Length: 303
Image (cartoon, rainbow, N blue to C red; front, side, top):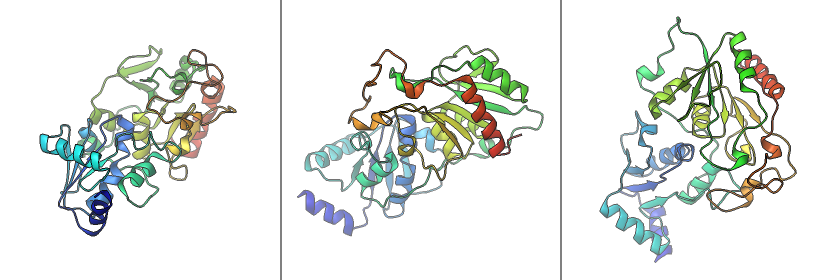
């Protein structure tokens, strides 16, 4: 039965297809190329996610984003899960987590039976969101260092952020810190935003500095020059280096990329220091970050 359903899926243009990827923010953003591919070959695409606001202003009329799934859809989802088929429901939950050694866009495309492509997700801005910053406003750098995981290799250690802030101020930049909680870095302005406010704020920034996170993927998708900190995660399985604007900041470790050696949601423990120490891959210096700030400004003529 499952093989028959897969055969039908390839031969028929479906009247509708459901795509499911509920969270996290960056993971959900990366389903966008998959949605576009499916919209080209299906009459209607219904996307179920906790972050439909990511996709406001979407230009394809046959694509709908929903935050709740109905009773009929749940039955269909369970039936296809039981039959191990994806005729009308493409369940991308755990697609990348179960296939961690390839780029997570490619994991999605593989699960959906689609060609693998190398491209960033597209975000569609309203006129207000895309409006250039007023000439009277100071240029600013966006900073996001808040980690929503307790894994030590998904954090940044060793950097004196007050010194970074002073350096950026001397270059004429304001430093705007985003996240749920302020990290109390002197000289920064902390703001809480909605998803759309964050997208607009990132889009109007001079450049982005932050950890591997949802905001960093939004910055990359918008083409904002970025410095992104990586620990145990291999940046080449999260970005496309030839399309990325900026630099990946990551220190040497003999177990580099160990995050991708475990099939799980949370990832492994550091092999060298466990869960409580400071991993080598995440331990930086202030001088190292300042050097890459200068390189970024020079490379992308940020003035």
